[in-house]
Length: 130
Image (cartoon, rainbow, N blue to C red; front, top):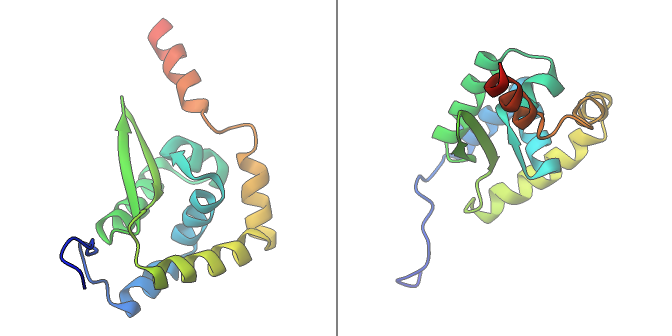
């Protein structure tokens, strides 16, 4: 390895990585992030029909494992797949998530997400007015 080559912050064991993918909520979140690039927690809660604490708890685990990365924008947390994932993880995610996205659940999740991305900003504007 060259001196200035990036080393992933945590050498994630393959069984830990696959265990993270085995939960349906985490798989659905990852599929939506794979399809959209970046989403706010509120986008995921509306699209998946799950509570904000449940979505946030699963995303926190994925963040702790360095599978996703988060950025804060005001009160909103936006998540995306970690750009520095090792190649084998990126390839596993690509194959698994593309297959999931064409499953009945994946298609339903994508349909529920349509027209809702970025809705958090509208909610923030309403809250500021009120």
